[in-house]
Image 1 (cartoon, one colour):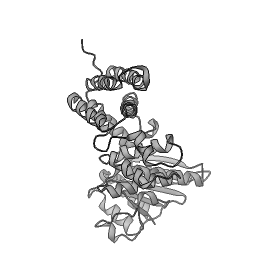
Image 2 (image 1 turned 135 degrees about the vertical axis):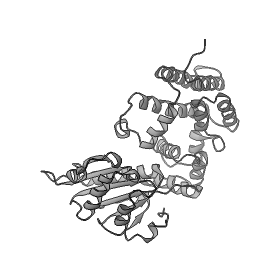
Image 3 (image 1 turned 120 degrees about the horizontal axis):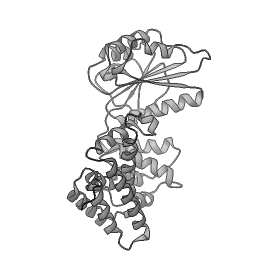
Image 4 (image 1 turned 90 degrees about the vertical axis):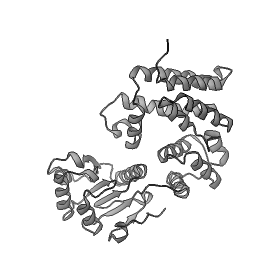
Length: 338
């Protein structure tokens, strides 16, 4: 998948890479508004550096809450010479102190250190970006533009399977993207689930088994409406999905994935995405979903999920009724009506 050309980017003197082609360099600029691609690229870069040397030291900085001198301190050689990865988030809202230090750093990058700068969009930090793109710091740019076309999303999903050493049939790839075309994060999660759970090559029947009937109405759309408290909309979407052939088992799994992530984020407020084992976009989405929820309501919802999971797997005669009951509990945000 080629990096998408941009206005300033097309004039850059440094390599312009797609997320899946990320490679180490003294300075790695990760630009563009697609957070899912940026997260994948940064994770791949960390894994590549750690494969070269397991002693890799990883440090995270926030460019808008930066103390002067921190970058140079973290990049300075250690006693034992371990390689270093310094990841800087929020460069599009960087403080003047960070921009000054970063520009100074470009003139003499530290040996054995990789500095990753995440810049989503905007003019803030333009002088720094222009310097990097002009070749100062011997850097590369990873372009993470938003994916709007189905063909681009198919390229993304295909790369996920290819990087995992798995094969997916073209028809299966198209079906998977059709089921999750509205949310790249959910598409990435679906790819990971298939890679982890489905043995052998992925064909259309495998995708149908996990995500059948969601080309028009996905399980995540039902879950999103219920979590937001839109009970009627969620029931209509549920009926649409079931009429299209959706299986109740993976539909409950979609609810479980979202509610458990919400519970994890709610139980560790202030914790970083990395410490929770989640990507930043997952934490941001969970925080939005948590609006209007209480800890007690989450507890009730998790119990309802356990009951629904057992029901759709044979514990009850009517799995559709069990799903409708679950939607009611979730839409009420776990508040038990008297």
